[in-house]
Length: 483
Image 1 (cartoon, one colour):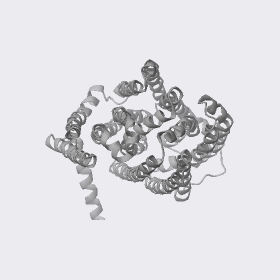
Image 2 (cartoon, helix red, strand yellow):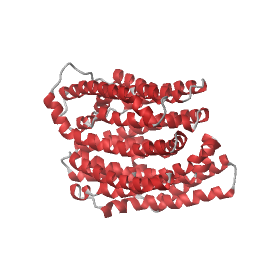
Image 3 (tube, one colour):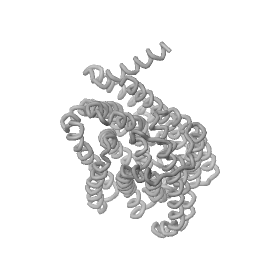
Image 4 (cartoon, one colour):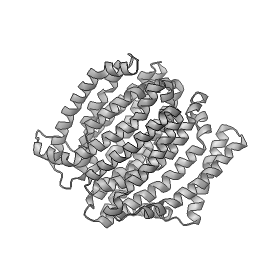
């Protein structure tokens, strides 16, 4: 158990370093690009990305998670999935290539056809590196992700900025994304020890798909629903509004992916290892919810409070219209740690059937809210998306009342301390803006004050998660000194 706990913590540290490093570099690059490009440039790429993301979901097909979840995965499993993914992703790209003119016609923009065909190459790349990524996760060699992601982000960032500076507009974003995918895949190929063999088994593929197909359908439903907002905004409004919306989501998503992403990527293989011990899975689920919420809630509420001066300082006045999207998205994404921890526990227990049912119920609720909101404008649509996220929190938590004996009341009690303290901190931070100080001075004061207030509350009231994190950091330092 101690060995697993050490692997989980070490894996989290590597994943956290990877996300912080990659997102940090990516964030700096995005600031340069946002100053060189327009919301419409971003919006055009977003129009195309909707369809590519959906097909990418097919390319990944949920089978990578099956490799992680299966206890006795062997060489035949990995090689079978690798060969299948390559062939399937090429077929999907061929379908996208042929349908590109229809996408251009849908948006009444023929210039999107070439954009679709070039950016769609990422589907084949995803199919090629899916098994490598599953192998790394299964064996908890998360430091491999660190090197591939960091180098890919730096190289692609340089490419994107140079192309934007040369006046290539939308193509700068395309060049950046494709370069990132290619470099990441190449580095993983040379650093990960696993190589595919010339072996294939339809029976093994069938076994893996008996678990994975439900995740594929679940992921497909979620992907279509998530991108439906971009599709509706792009169709009924314009690329400029879509660019503002996507930029607004980008800021809070940066935080969530950096904190929640590493926790969840480490959590599934760890939970799968303990899947026969429900008590341990419950403990790990609770630890994930408590830890990620303690970190994410103050960041989300704090970002919502400083959204306007932050956007003006980082992106200039031309992006100020994205501020409401930033603030509403902070509320929506703050709940994601609760979603993912409950869902990962369900996956780890091998209940992908429940996972699929949850996705269907949630998307019916979300789709109903979206349809109801469309006549009232884009801001109401985004607010209803936040409401859908709140409702989904309860839906995702429901099965674990029975599977893990982790009730609604227990989860709410675990979440109340960070929610209450972060809300108090947010009100104080927002109040600084009323002083009408210089933008830079305002943000510095807000960040320092917000951090100090939140940590002071956590220490004063002796939040269990705060003491846990401090203890883990001290223990890790002690181990490093003894090495």
